[in-house]
Amino acid sequence: MRVVIVTESFPPDVNGVAHCALQTARHLVARGHSPLVVAPATAAGTAVGADLQAPCPVVRVPSLPLPGYPQVRVALPSRRVAGAIVEHRADIVHLASPFVLGVRGMAAAARLGVPAVAIYQTDLAGYARTYVHAGEAAAWRRIRSVHAAADLTLAPSGVALRDLEAHGVPRVKLWQRGVDTVRFRPALRDEALCRELAPNGELIVGYVGRLAPEKQVELLAGVCGLDGVRVVVVGDGPSEPGLREALPGAVFLGRRTGDDLARIFASLDVFAHTGPFETFCQTVQEAMASGVPVVAPAAGGPLDLVAHGRTGLLVPPRDAAAVRDAVSSLAGDPALRAAYGAAGRAMVEGRTWAAVGDQLIGHYADVLTARTAVAA
Image (cartoon, rainbow, N blue to C red; front, side, top):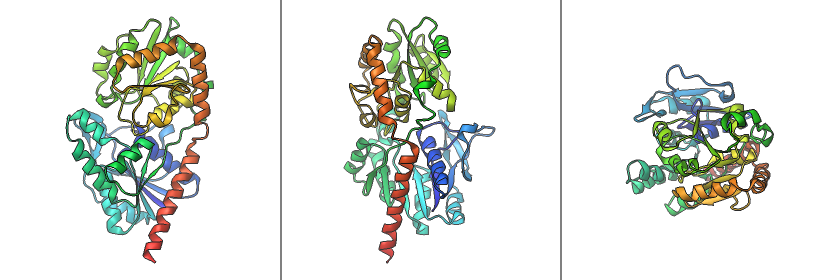
């Protein structure tokens, strides 16, 4: 099968869309298919680490940094999208979180008569509420118009699927994300790193992800005030300067990837996610694979991932006191943390990228079969 993956983000970017697109390309190659990636160009001089190398050709489209958030780049109009689909002789077009570049990919696929599968991955309506305090209805109109043109839309969680259907998006199915259970595993816990991060033996509570307003990392301020607790923040983004002031005593490690990130995950005592707009939340799965109990908002993707009272604790969204109290309850009960961590690891062991990648190929096959039936 010849697949063109049109993605709004791709490594060296570090985010859920880029990671999923990379894993999809890797799995397609492993199964003998022929993917090609179309993605925004990176900033000049940006290097790609060995763990983020693409397994297939990548066509880069000219792009500009998003004002106020230079880590995010937005593709400019280009004929390269349609050209890539034609030159690759695509059987199917995979649109990863289509919004700008993906919209052009959708239009090109429709014009060329190539079936398209759209991957819903970004809560644009939630971002509209966060950044402009309005525009949620307009965001949903955009989402609906883009995804309605696809042969199939794949939602990463039950909440996302229900939201799409409630807002009139047709032909939606569930496709969750995989996790690398070999890379992320409890055995990587590093006691030397623990002593470095918490020299007085503090409980290590970690956040991993972008440092941006929609992630609401400032909700960890109360956790910073707990006795015997050290907050560790992994990631970068425009909110970092403000968070350094809002989270006194927290350790900021910057962006980490690959085995280095896996070692940090396994060395946490509790993983705390704060953002309420996650359509999935890959870092929750990575924490669970690392045998770490999770505290997360009872909203979006974490509702599918965290078994409350078994693998972690779900708290009301945007409630700093609830986050603090959940961490405090786990801090005082090492046996409970161990039980939650072990249950979390057991829960995700079957969610490999190979398993969910095969599911994706099955969705491609269904779309191609349906197209052939219509043509006949």
